[in-house]
Every structure is written in structure tokens, then in C-alpha cells.
Image (cartoon, rainbow, N blue to C red; front, side, top):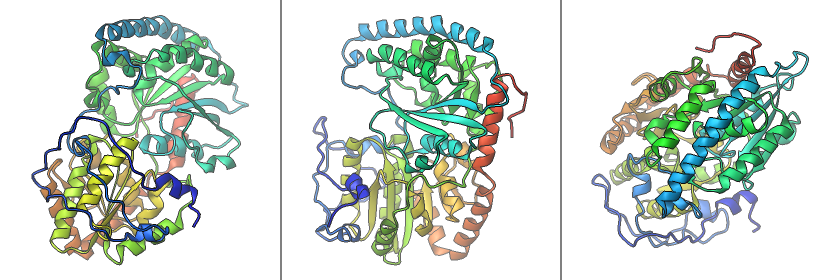
Length: 505
């Protein structure tokens, strides 16, 4: 049987990982890994495959997705930082000098530029690292799709030539999607960044945007430098998370440059929690941080894979699906979710554990091996890089977020808008969307036993599941992407001196 494009992207392949050959410590609350049984998975059977592959557990399989670890500067091939601290110092000094030279230049000339005429839509350049997966990509894409052609003509620029372009843009001639391989993150210490600053400046001069909207603040210093090289363009930075807790390994000089850049430009936050923490970390800003909430009425960016939904229903075989959507990073605490799922199955609960993730391929291989050792094919499934997985949520019985740190937690809204009751960690971002016992259940971060108890409570009380799911849906449906787009356009006009609208909710 000929595989579809989706199947080719998601089929299991043998992947080897590099690193020291040492076994990860077993979490205390987790049952011992079990040898995979040679049984056929319904997901694989519907694709004409023989069953799960028996994999050797990679060394150090658990630490990268089990804990409160901080994100560190990536050590990529060609980064002198990996072995020569002197080059790191020289790199930081050169980048700082470029920023101090071109940031004031960009401020001066962007202010002198005339505001665009009211007779034409704004020209907007939105820049994002991911395009197909994750909360950042979703906010960028859905906001653009909610804007009308009369409001803005948008160019969506993704950092990376190999990224997939959502097919929904084929019906939007007012939106141009471009992919460039740009090294715009200074913490990687790649000397190619200095060349790519000029590449980006050339692209800005070609597009002649009225405003540049950059998603993720760590890219802001590089974009400000390129905008200055291009002759001066207003830059807006979008804050999606609590970044001050995720900057381990970044030098003091680069951290100071990032803070200085964020003080100079207008900032957008997805939630009051993000705005509060940003003010504490950045310090004073030239203008108040705009709080523009995300919507929930998503436009499907990829065609729904109905066969995948049918496979999921067959695999679950009438059992309740307990699902977690997460990027493979330590802060998502995927291990807590796996631990709770294994404990409930050992009690004889009729559940099906579904993990939907995205991230690096090497991380996927280790996590898949871990998942396959914990769960037999009929007990759960791990999907990686599934396009538009939100269409599967209508089949889910309970949604879980075990994150120890979030700025918003967009997956909570995705569960709620489908009427799925949620169990999530008791952190400030989640408390903005979930009232314990009213629109969901909260549990202590890092406590897998508390997560198990909360799930057990929902499994034992169908009336509670129905009540929490309905209340969560009503709360989530108040958020509209059209409102997000309108407030974003108001912010652009304010930045360009054409209005003075307030942006606090």
C-alpha cells in the first residue's frame, strides 16, 4: 500500500543517538520499564505494517524530558563556544558593538519615516522560528489568517528553508510565506550570524515593511541590527513565555543586550502572567507592554487526517483517551504524564494513553523508545510531528498539562474549546484559564502522584467530567482570533503614530 505524505513524515525509523553510554536513573514514582510485547498496534495494522519495532533503549533516555531543567544555548556544529571560550568573548563583544551602533540608528530613522497612507493596508513582516508546530507558530499563523486584506499585507518569514508551509496559505494571496536559513540567535555563537544579519537587511529593504513583528524576544537584537542596516523600520517583539527562567548558559553580555533591545521596542504579551514576569526581568520599558490574548476559533492549517482519527478510535477500542500535547523539553514534564498513565493502567483502568509531541528527531527517538517500553500497543500511542493534531481532540476524554513553567499553555485552550475536561499544574499561567473544580482540576507541579489522583477523580465521576468540560468550553469560546488580529492592527497603528488606542484587556 502506498504511504501518504503524512505517513512518510511520521513512520517509525531506526535512529541512533550519540552520547555517553550510561543508564538514566529510574524515577521513584514510575514502574519498571517492561519489555515490549511483539503485538500488533492498531495504528500500524491500518497502514499494512507488521507491528511495533523492538528498539534498544538509548542511553540517557529520560533526563531531557523528565524534570525542571532549563533550556541552554544550543551547541551546534561550527560554534566556537563549544571549545574556545576566547572566541565566545570576541563574538559577544562584536555582536554587542553592532547592536550599540545600529539600534540608535534604527530608532532615529524609523521615527522619521512617515506613517503609511490610510488609503492602503499596512505592510507587515512577521518573523517566526517554527511555522508548522507549537504555540508560537500557531499564534503567528492564526493571527495572520484572521487579518483581512484591507488591514494588512503580511509576509510571514520562517527561519529555515526546510520548514513545511501550511497549505491554508494557498487561498490567501495577501499573505506571502518565505523561508530563509537565518542564524539570528546570538547564543548559538555561529559566525555565520554576522553574514545573515546582512542577508536579513537585504530582505527587509526588498519588502519595505511598515513594521516588523518578531516572535520570540531572543531574536530581537538581531532583527533590530538588520532593521538599522536596512534604513530603519519599527520593530515589535512578541513574548510567548517566561524567558528569564530559561536562559541558562547565556553570557551576561548577551543577556544585557537582549534586555536593552526589549526596553527600546514595543512589546506584546499573550497573557498578564507573561507581562508581569517580563517587566520584572526586563526592567523599565519605553511604553506599556500590550496584552493581546490568543484566540481559540482556529482555522485548520492542514487538512484533517480522518483516517488517523479512525485509527485512534480503533486503537482505543472504547477506552477513555487521556492525552498530552507537548514539545519535547524538560519543562513540559512528559515523564510525569507517562508515570500517571502507567499507574492507572496497572490499577486496571480502561484508558488509552496518547502523547502528541514535536521537537528534535534525536529526542523523538529516545522518547519513543521510552514510551514503547512503558506501554503495550493496545495501551497507548505516541504521535510525533502530526500536522494539525487538534482535530483528534474531539475523541479525547481528558486533557493533561504537566508543565512546570508556562507563559500561557495554549494546549489547555485547545482542550477546553473541544469540551475536554483538563487536568493541569497549579502555576500562574494555568490559573488564568482554569479555576480548580469549576473549569478544570489543578495539581502540584512535579507531583506525579497528585496528577494520578486528579485523573482518578475524573475517571470515577462522569458528571464531573461533563460539568468541567462544558464550563471550560464556555470560557474558551470567548477568545476570538478576530479580536486578536484587530488589537494587533491597533498596536501597529499606535507604534506608527496613527492612533493612541489602549491595549490592556
